Image (tube, rainbow, N blue to C red; front, side, top):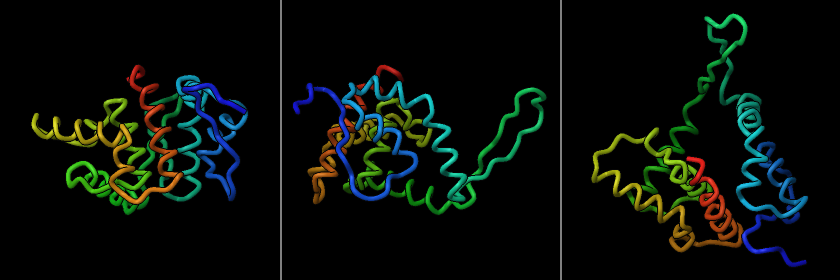
Length: 172
């Protein structure tokens, strides 16, 4: 059946779903949504799902902070820095060395660029910022698909990232 332009849709997928991505998949499988509506619906529980999955897989641990009597707050330090280091290396290679990013790295760059979040990771001079914003914009626009051998999943991710980026930009 035809889907209206500008809608996100999920088709049936084979294999096990990622516990964090499953709610998004099910939401879009139920009915096509515009990116802004999908983000609004998923934003309500995304942080809790990500934290729970990272705790479950042993990548972070919860440590109570002292000082709050009525409402407890927690810190979530990394247990192992290997994955964070690898992700940082991949991000830097894509931004500074112009290496074609892996789909996951392209997705991270797209979201960070859309919400102007690269500043939380990088400390650069003006020339460096111009370079990073230009390169991140290229990646967010889907140019990374042309830079490497790509299949349908990568092309789908590039198109979806572009649609989501446009919906995230007003929220930044």
